[in-house]
Amino acid sequence: MLLRAKAFLASFVLMLCATSVHAQLPASSLTVSETSVIRFTPTVPKGDVREGVCWTESIAVSRSGAWRCMVGNGISDPCFMTPGNREELVCGANPAVKTDGFVLKLKKPLLKSSHPNRKPEPWIFRLADNSICEKMTGTLSAVNGEPARWSCSIYIRDQVRPAGVVTELTPGKIWLADKFPESAIGTRGVTPVKVPVKVIWE
Image 1: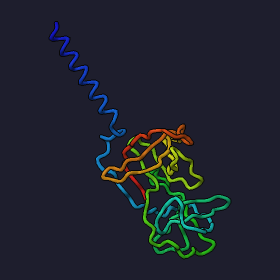
Image 2 (image 1 turned 90 degrees about the horizontal axis):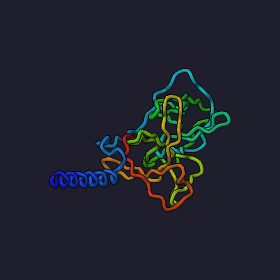
Image 3 (image 1 turned 90 degrees about the vertical axis):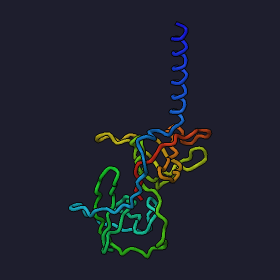
Image 4 (image 1 turned 120 degrees about the vertical axis):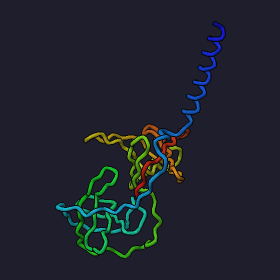
């Protein structure tokens, strides 16, 4: 009876240790073996053609060939140049949720790029928890005094639900995102969850 009690106690201690180690691991770390980094090139969609002007390079996408454009009364960012055609761009494409966007027919020629050698940076990425995070282009809210640079959402059928914000990405074989809940915006002293990144589009 005493031996059985000791064996139970030993197995209980081992279980607690394993739980403690697991809690310190990044969320869903075992589902990501390597982060894929993809330079996004949209396909040219058919049917939906709109007119507009592009007055500056993209804020959302930090690379050559991406622009910030005015379409009707709204801003579309990014709009991507297509090979061999400086009169039409593709706007509204999103590789993470597989939307093709629309063709933007320019009313005015594009300006000359002022940053032809811009270093690519993450635009959209999918995390191991399956939330999709997209670069924000407006006023950036702060968490722990750092700008929340990406806004994350969970896509469930036709519903889009807020899923927190990301302030920083740490490169590596497996990139890690510093993710905070929506409730952390505007606060300090909050510890981020280190979530592995499955795919990055830039």
